[in-house]
Amino acid sequence: MIPQPSDVKSERNPIAKVSELIADLPESISTDIQSSARPRDFKTGDVLFCSGDPADEIFLLTKGRVKITQVSGRGLEVVPRLDLLGEIIGRLGLGP
Image (cartoon, rainbow, N blue to C red; front, side, top):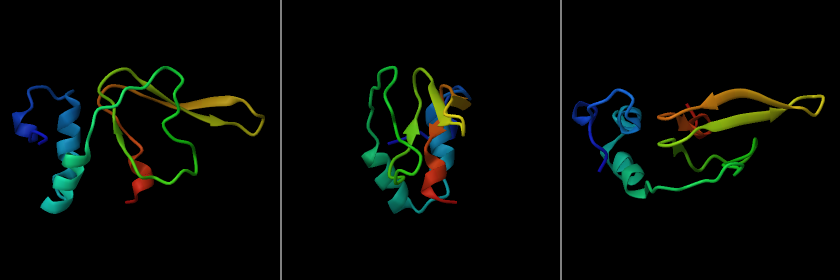
């Protein structure tokens, strides 16, 4: 079970962000999210998802950083965002 924000000692604790994100969801949905959460390790250069992929996962960054990239019209890699510890990645694709 994910601790409630009041149980978390540091504002930078990524679990606090998840707790805030799901706090207003119905309990059954919140429980489903918590029960399906699992740790995953990625190596440098691994791709989490590509633009246009169906959004069926979100990621809570608990270690390291994630570089979000796009390819410009001239074929160059552009880095519009760098996500750091505590960021939730992929939630925009899940809807409003």
